[in-house]
Length: 372
Ligand SMILES: C[S@@+](CC[C@H](N)C(=O)[O-])C[C@H]1O[C@@H](n2cnc3c(N)ncnc32)[C@H](O)[C@@H]1O
Image (cartoon, rainbow, N blue to C red; front, side, top):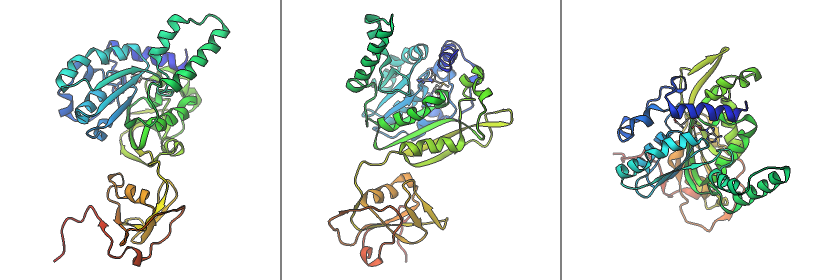
């Protein structure tokens, strides 16, 4: 049996009845659960809670939405102007999630959740549309496969299931590990493609502390049970950096492993990251001061920030470093005199002369009072 066939079979069973060995204890926000039907809460095969990162007005995409639990939680947070899309490849899981759609729309006050059929490593291809196409154009011979490939290519381009730069926040709960290793790089590139510039990801998943050996990867039950397909903890972060994300972080890290197999620890983590703004680097005279506690730090684009020094940054990085993404690690100082910007290659760290920023507006979110 292939990895995909094993995953389909296991989660069809999970939609039918509760699979206790797939359940990992998670501390969800109880208030968000009160609106949810019990069956959705019970058929929970997640390992974290990415719904905590949802903001009002977000367009949220949930990869491997299963029973729809995270989607229905997120729907309460996005409000009337937001939208939630759940993607899953399993018809039984989609049917379970959709079973409560009308009831949930009434409770929420609007129908702001949609469930679509797709593989998360190929988010442009609409599998429901492909099924309709195959009903009209069944595959009988090699030439039919060639024609099907051409149809798929056209479909991805002309009617993508999830369009480029269309999502504010991609979430996922215990699904990336299930994707075949050879498709994992494409999966993360797909996530990058669909997120808007400046958009975010919050992904809860299982990672291993050591590389998983081939004989464990070949164990179908361990794979579909969210264990042996897990990426190694460093490789998981690196995959997002390689795809182009910045501010890539482990936001949650369970001390206690969920499972230990052959002395390899498999634990639940949540990573967060941001897609950089698609703006050129323009020098208008901004500076940031890194507060510490480390003597210096580097960002994912290779810029260095020395503790306590006014470091020169372009306007784009100034906005990013003084945003909530960086948790108030930086004090921002706007130029004293607004000036016409010029394109800039701020590849490494350079200091900003005090005279350039003296008298400029300071952005310090911790500074709530005034002295004396
Ligand atoms: C471990 S369950 C998690 C379900 C849900 N996120 C939750 O928190 O309960 C994995 C889900 O991902 C789906 N899935 C697995 N691999 C997938 C893929 N490559 N593309 C789309 N869905 C996938 C499965 O059908 C299943 O519904």
